[in-house]
Amino acid sequence: MDYIRETKDISAEEAIILWQASRLSLSKSYEKAPEILKVHGSVIGTLGNFSASIGKAKSKKTFNVSAIVAAALKNGTVLRYVAELSDGKRKVLYVDTEQSPYHCLKVMKRILRMAGLPDDRDNENLEFLALRKYTPEQRIKIVEQAIYNTPDIGLVIIDGIRDMVYDINSPGESTRIISKLMQWTDDRQIHIHTILHQNKGDENARGHIGTELSNKAETVLLVEKDKSNGDISSVSAMHIRAMDFEPFAFRINDSALPELIEGYKTESRKPGRPEEEKFDPYRHITEQQHRIALEAVFGLKEEYGYKELEDALIKSYTSIGVKLNHQKAVLLITMLRNKRMIVQENGRKYTFMPDFHY
Image (cartoon, rainbow, N blue to C red; front, side, top):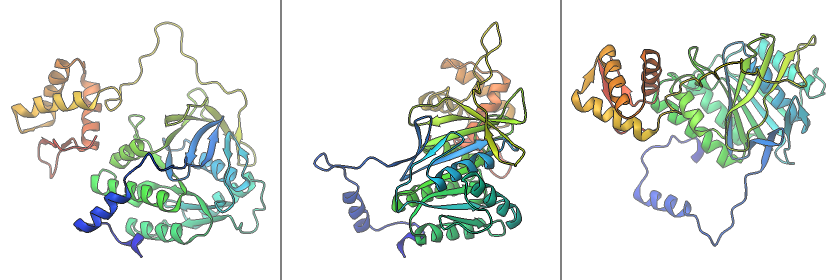
């Protein structure tokens, strides 16, 4: 079948067919993507697209996603998630790549209880796969077969997208799996929601795959522990194409289920000078600024050691109006490496990749 064949070079004739099939025309009408997941009226998930939840370890990301699945199963509201799946799109596929079958079963039972469904027998609208023991390549093929051969599928959860690749910093692997998400969602007109850890030192999704996921996803939800109460987890939109929603929070109750905290307010800013927004070299510096500064740095030398690169970047970025200190330069170099704008291979010095994709 064509969908399981790996995409390689295509012939000129095939390219012409795809070119013609991809042309838009004002004489045609194109349907708006059906909206299936919302929070406070804000759309976070549509058919034909994918989204993600990110957060630090122990932030209760899986509990949060359990609420999304429960809402889909009951086709109603759980926590603040509202699901509206049409007939023929009611089946949910949950893929877990990290946990043992024993712990996966606990998640499955939790989802059914949250949806108000019996947890002592299988539900026809929920299929749960435990893929911990397989390789990334095997996981991709298993998930692909399940997506294309499950009737009435509407929502797919991939709990552990990181385990669909061998190297989270590989541009090739990251591009491949993100392309798969786009292909699967478009071909089957489904929505895929993935889960990925954040970096320990900042709020970015982990690795090159996290960068690509954040760039292409319809919505990226941030699940984090409340700073004043570690038993509370808050959910907000880090990136969202639709209207933003008011953050909400939940705690785990005595029945081991997530429970909405009514009237939750995000932590108010302390009196005095407002806190400076955390520096993000991807959001706070434009692609053009990056290119000008990097071309200036590597126009002087082809390769740099770490410290001399840091010094050169601070000087170059300052010349285009971006002031950097040591801490910001470290974040910048990390981002440049994750985006493969600069590379360091086999322990060699850093070199510039002028054909980078931002």
